[in-house]
Amino acid sequence: MTPHDGLGFEIMGNPVVSTEWLSANLGNPHVRIVAAAPNSRAFSIGRIPGAARLDCSQLFDVAQGDFVDGQAFAAIVGTLGIRRSDSIVLYGDQDNSSAALLMWLFTMFGHTNVSILDGGSSAWLGDDRETEFESADWPPSDYPAIARNDGPHRVSRDELRGLLGNVTILDTRGASDYTGDVDASDEMTRTGHIPSSINLPSSALRDSAGRFLDTGALAARLVDLPHDRPVIVYDRTAARAAETWLVLRFLLDWNDVRVYDGGWNEWGNSFGLPVVQGLQP
Image 1 (tube, one colour):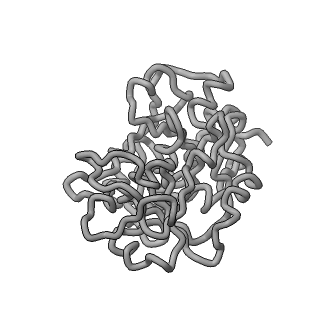
Image 2: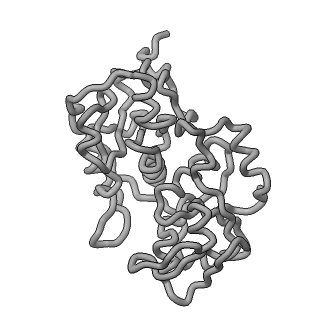
């Protein structure tokens, strides 16, 4: 069977795919490749063949201060030609945090057959894979409007405050951000971390080439985390937190993992909420 025979490729349950796999499936009519590329110029100078571009900001409703609803999501992805039955492979331009964020969003809308390209565009170019300059020309699809299901994947600021002490909280920022050893700014009025949170930078889950560590190495990095408590992951915003969510949820099979997408940008600027500085959780 060739990779293009029917649905024989079956990436369901394989949340991370290699450049080898994706190269073999270029042109597969059941696979849609999407670049989570906020930088349109970087995307235009050499993309994976057949890829369409979707900026995460397109899925945020500024007027509502929240991600788009199911009807708007359906219109956006339908315009790109994505069908509900498609397998989607996402990749980022400089790192894969934007792709992980898109994967998290697609999951909340119930599109579960979504994978991420290990190492993103850097791995693709580093492996000297084929690129093109033409835009993807997929016919629009009639993507159904599905209500966004935040509950299993997302936590709000007020809900998190009520959960302090009863969940494991992972702070995926760098060490200096976690300890508060950075200057406050107009954008960030307070420094430090959410009480009880454990610092695990998202970069610790990748190798020097930007690919995820193997599952044994990932498990070793997380060996001290209790397995009997729900996990909440946060960063400054949602993107890098979504990377750690992906690792825990899909590579290590942790069931109860959610993202606090307001992140430190929201918590640190919300006066009245507790903040800790230093190495102590």
